[in-house]
Image 1 (cartoon, rainbow, N blue to C red):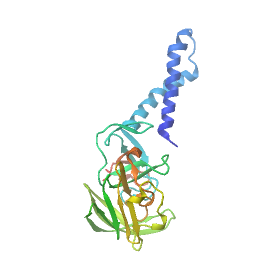
Image 2 (image 1 turned 180 degrees about the horizontal axis):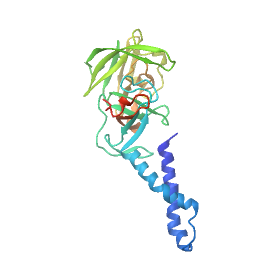
Image 3 (image 1 turned 90 degrees about the vertical axis):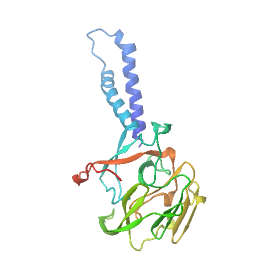
Image 4 (image 1 turned 90 degrees about the horizontal axis):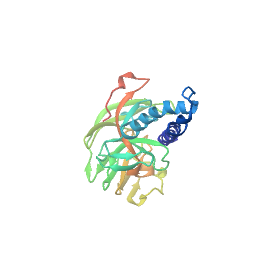
Length: 268
């Protein structure tokens, strides 16, 4: 469900009813006549919807983490704020950039519309920028021939969707200006080749084998990966994210019902 589109339609409807009442019906009503209920509700709700719509469209949008693909950076149940202006001003609903302020960089955490189903929002980390060559073999990431720095950082235990306890190797990775933790599961391959979509756009830019993959990111696209590297449905499997699908940059955890200590944490 496209909440932004629903809000836009509600804005148009309430605004049209309110305006019609002011211009057409109010002048014809007796001074002591009661305002029709529909016009009264539209007058009350239009300013509220307008403020919320503008805030969500151009400043910040809330987002709830639905899965463990970004562990340990983000956990299921985190409510985050998504910066909508850091990477340029986009027109709501059609999501077309009209003012170019900046662009995603290596290591940024991005919320975007899933290329295979734009009605769904995904969140992953930016690994490859337009023109980059991304190589991931033996659980190690190389960008444009430069291995990204990774150091062991202990273990991390979590409960997966099947309610099983999972213990993963936690690693500290340096990606661009971002120093963040990732998870690797011992014995798991770098990519399940049999699960890769063979038809995603620019599939010819990628090669896969038993050790991992190499992808050349096309112009206007980004390569995304989850921090929970062995438990993430990401660009390895369904391809590149076009610039037009960008929603915004994840910047802050503003709420978590299960762990109040996470409130206020910046997303790095």
